[in-house]
Image (cartoon, rainbow over all chains, first blue to last red; front, side, top):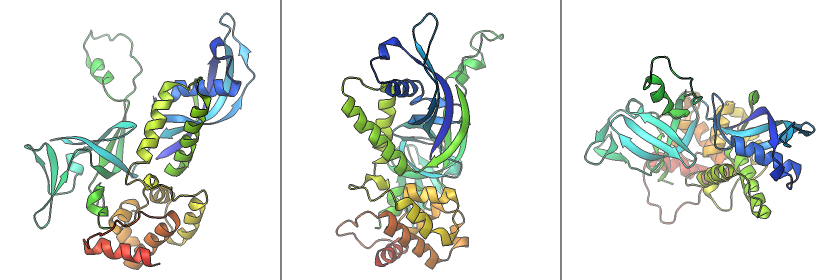
Length: 201
Length: 153
């Protein structure tokens, strides 16, 4: 679920950070730039793991900032396809269930990926799995569920240049999309609300 | 920015937790010079999530140790599981057959019932397990027996 990604970047230490030990200043600088950000096709950066190499600091012309080239590894959240992981139910709509984890919000389980016999209850606004023997199992909001990652979606947030077609084109809609989305499945046995499967211990 | 290698290693939740917990404790020592707020935010949230039930790390004291991972890999080697399956087992620590089924592909085909119970027993032994709640009622049979097997060995 978490991977390490090796990145090379130029770190610019401002004069106001000179009071910090160099290593701390470099770490803070990298974390400020990457932590909690999504890198396209890489994943959600969590925190710096370690610094592998740094160059000598060079004072930039005109600014007084110290420039350091660094190579480092970041902890990145990037579940692989087919991975089973835990999430919580945020909300349900007729098209499926939205899941979240404390640090990541954009997980969606479409209704086709719910077990057969699932129905949406409009009165309760939840999905219900009608398992055999008239047992109704509810996908209640806030429940912890196991789900399997089946697809990921990337939306580059780089601002596009002024569009030729005029304002309010398709670009604006695209920009509103989350940069990294995960599509999940709860079809297999053992997936779904953890309590259904684990409460028998 | 240049990405040199998009994936140099895969980390298990336990390793991530250890690293982040250390970051948090270091932050407390620094006091005045606080690290960037965006890092604090995401680190705190990831830790919070990792310590959430039914994550295995929600137990105090944490049953994972530094040598748990190599031990588990060695014990499960005869079953020929893939790396991804082992990572999921480490992260989820399945203790019932249905839960194990979610981490191992085509489990019914690859392993018979005895083998499945053996795997569960090894997981429980190496990675620990939740304490059985007091006065647990006898519930669904399938899950129950697999649990009992896991505890015996």
